[in-house]
Length: 199
Image (cartoon, rainbow, N blue to C red; front, side):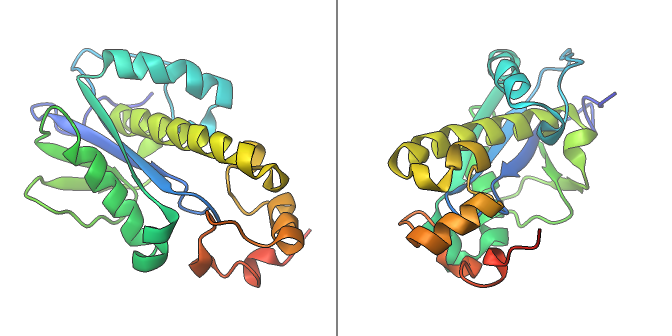
């Protein structure tokens, strides 16, 4: 059972990202502030949920959250500042867009780089421990998937409707055959290690 808060007396925003390990597309992040009486047994780490379950949960989270927001950093920014910094920046953008200013941030993972004066706590595998982070993981994942579905219409040969830009065998083989698109992350060494087929 996931916990609702780390510091119950504070207004906490859970933060998580999606798309960090992809070869193409932006990294998305979400920030979510849940009410003190929030309950949802179905909510869990987005990676433990099916795609259908995530899309069922998204409107429920958006309707019941006190505040939520999504931020992104595109592939060009990722190439300039690296994916770790881009993940932090996407979270910062999501937090900055919240209609309620949180008193504390719950960050999924073991590192964060804040801008501003909001204190934070990093929680390793927090999306499987705290509901606000789990909610953020669902929003970040589904909004990023929506984005990749749209890109797939332009570049169907890369199967982004299925792999969402992650380095699957089919995606890497498509890069070998067709080259890269304007949406690929060029600093991700697309032609060597990521293209080595180890199956």
